[in-house]
Length: 279
Image (tube, rainbow, N blue to C red; front, side, top):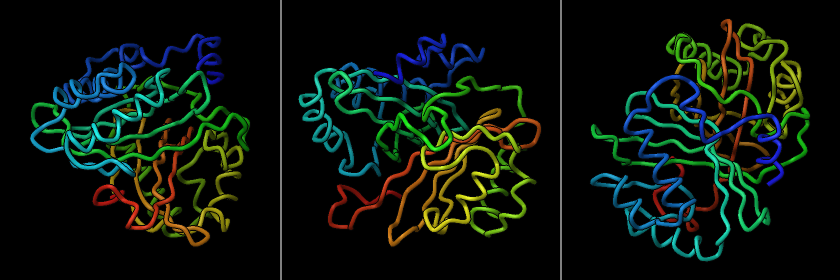
């Protein structure tokens, strides 16, 4: 609740973000918002999964089985356990058949608070076929002092999407994967606004973290997508003996990364998976 109340005090309305950006939502993005807001926030999971998913629903979310029945087997008990649900889609955008959204969830009057990042693949009619996510506990205190879900929420669709995707792709390949931290200034603005709770403020803070044992090795870039000035990557890193699935969301301006959000989730042992895994 604290996060949502802080947004309101700043005049921010996450649920209106797409209308604010001045462009119509594609059908895929509408369907993603529908399954989130009607099926989970609104509690009508069965109607939503039947309405918004396609001929298959391949699931990569930990503990959730494939298909409509796998979705219902997880979410019907979830809804019963959590009768009070405040869910706000903070940021969302689309890139062809791919849809991304990030949401803040407050359950049972703030007894549990979560930040999720989700990626969906849709069919020609915008129906959801596949879903990936990472879920992280909302942390009110961050190393940078920035709110974990705060910052810019409006996509600038006039920005050069492909150029911005190239910047983020090269940053990921050369700095995160290649270890060329001395080149971070080629891709990241000095005044980087950092929202990832474990990373210090600014470009220097990101460089310090990237070199650390805590960051480990960024082993795989699974997918990259973007729209306008927002670009997101989904990949895997290995740190301190753990495999970690991670979404990194970036905002790019003047050919540099100027803002960064992150949610990550440790990948459990194979026997704990309810599906084919995080990737």
